[in-house]
Image 1 (cartoon, rainbow, N blue to C red):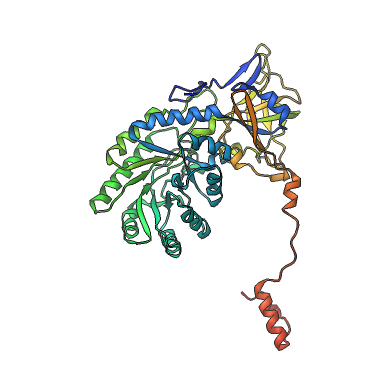
Image 2: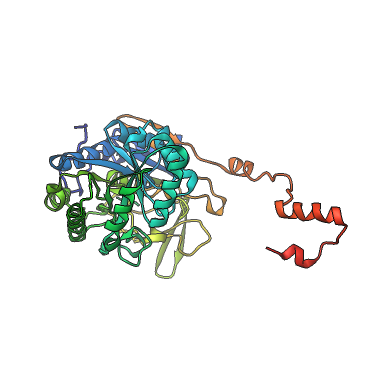
Length: 460
Ligand SMILES: *Cc1c(COP(=O)(O)O)cnc(C)c1O
């Protein structure tokens, strides 16, 4: 176990790596304000130790059922983070060709990568087969046909699992619920066995199992029990038909605590897995994203201005919804920690914290207990290690946020800020091109001398 290892299986106020020392907020042994002196705000800052501890805690809880862990790269795709997890033995769950390249660049073997996602392109499927991907989680009959066609063309056998839609409501935010029957994800559970039999009969496909992922930021464990039980019943009935089902992928979605609440109990999650699917003898995999990195990162910002508004004071930050999208997209509330510990004796108002973006959804919520704020103060949004930097954009032509990793008493930039100079380089216009069809038309017209009419221009 690492220096600040979390021993509890519930994530609550157990983060020794994040603490005020002599009034300064430290990530491991690094004062965050020292990082802010070296790296311009806003930036994300992750604790290597916190990520390792989370992985080790989950791996320990799941080890009795021999469950392998594939990190959902979309939660945090920085290759330094991926490398750190990979070194611990973690595989990866990807949802795009870009994420495949990230995982490979981080040194993750293709044999430990699962390709999920509802809309894989032909180029992405071909690349995955080419590098020897561990498994493609296929989401429709149409995708089965395309994967088979590409495998045939490449002379390969594609390792396929079918993603099941079990019609289970994960009881989480509507925007991160993925397994009700109206959702775009997966194959309706009643159709899976027939399609699987077709896959098993195709020489260019290897039918390896079934997969499920019911949603994200899940705190109530009951939907997991329902979904995994449904998967167990499905495996049993498929085997009853003579189908071979060696692998079972249980997806991710475990929620994390924020503020002073405690998160879902990992021991309970592990117990549900053991009880519902443990007896099947399948190779089991889970695909957590948020749980491994969410509580391991902060987003550091500077307070630019204070402004009085009806009913209180507003703090305008140098961080916006483009840098941390979760509050605007999912109504998420991230705790805020001042980099210098507030003096508790002073009675202070609540502050409404907002970003600089020209959108009224660019706000982070109302915060108490921050002490008396002044322009120039540094603050950190907590629990921002997942779906923070990976969702950041350059909206409003703002720099793409930087990322920093702390390890003991050292820190380093693991993604430097992308500034407007770099963005503008991509917009140097190319030469005007003649569309292929117009080109043909022009060649014909050149030969017969006809004039271009509105009809020929508009024709498709
Ligand atoms: C997003 C996603 C995950 C990870 O979800 P978390 O809530 O971050 O654990 C796992 N599997 C699939 C298929 C996903 O789309």
